[in-house]
Length: 556
Image (tube, rainbow, N blue to C red; front, side, top):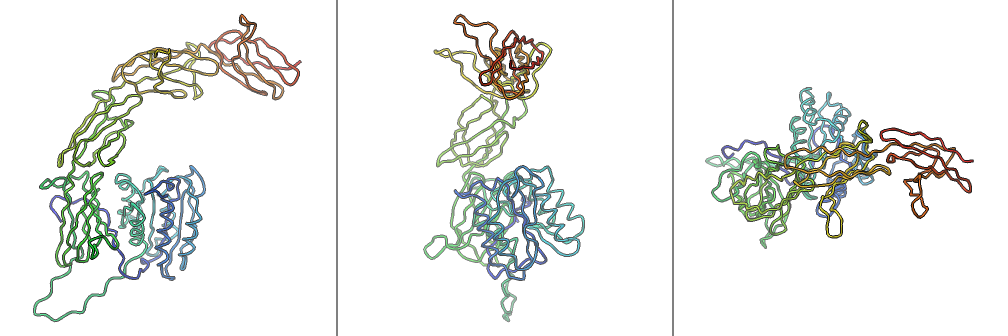
């Protein structure tokens, strides 16, 4: 192995060359049936790809295989206990598992840790060798620690192995579940599309029958021994550059497709990850190397199994080390959104800090935090790290509504909207953000604004100013109270102004229906009209700021 590279790698998803045999002991497939499986890869829903891949692999299973299926998130939305052993482990279950997966709904959350725990318990892993194969497109969402579970099962001394197939996960997401496999002596495999998912399932659900060793041929000297892994690829950002650093080297993906007589790829693709090695038959291959958004294709020659082939890929790329801050000296802001666009439809996005590889060249960077937006070009030099510490330049506005000087508005009913203070030529202000309820905050560029707070029929406008890096607390006094009405049944209730206008009409301040209705009203005098069919009554009402008025209404 090359010096200075000792990171743990992702497992090699190798092609299967012989009739598949079931891994030793009983096994349970744990299938992610959460709602995120409706996401798409190459224009197809992940759940559709997973069903097809599972069916293809299970069709090769021998009838004596003892295999079961457990699923989570397939019956309820938002439930962390939606885990079910759909097909108990037994022989001859391949078709039952395929049928169950094809009929399954994909609805809920991702309690993957508890599902693996239940699968291990079902297999009675304290008594005999057992294997769990977890297929997931998301990370744990039910406040459990898959790493701790893996360590717990390994520390118990039982003969249990968990393999994890991360379907469509990012490298960062994969790292949060890979430990479940690694802590039990299993494998973590990253599957990005239909083909790699099939390879991953073959690698974990079945084991390839070893090729027969050639009969020994008497020779004066022993033949060189074949290497278990004869391919050790390497990637560099620039020709002659340094080895990739620890933060990115494990994200490298090398894909090898054998070339036919016409020089075009023909046959199954073998993938090697990070710093791991692989095994390939001698011949010519199309090697595709990918690291984040950098990609390069090249044809390489793989020598005999007795020699180590070390093909090298030069990505002509650099690293963007991006940190986003709301104001000078502030901590990196996890809510700051960034996106990078470049030639050949290059696009990548994320939040907060990032350390990502991009092709060399000039790219367009857009950063958004609240209503603030920053656009600038970024030049990525091959083999270099571009450190960009970007200050977006915002302050924080926190809006608190009150009924009166001593009574705050609690809960989430009131509406808060922020406008630029300056009006356009038509007398309108530009809205820059809105929120509901207590604790409304807004990231805003420096400048003058107006906060408009509405609750029921009460509304108030409060002007304020924002400075970069500072918090501005805005108190919005509604000068209002709550009026609560009861009536015998479902009568129509309307609150009207106590005095008519110059045309003899009384303004309406809101309406509802009995037997109980309440609203917020500015302090003052009103008339409450109750009506049903041809009957009506009017009741005077006085609302005081910060007080609740309860009025029982009745028809004559």
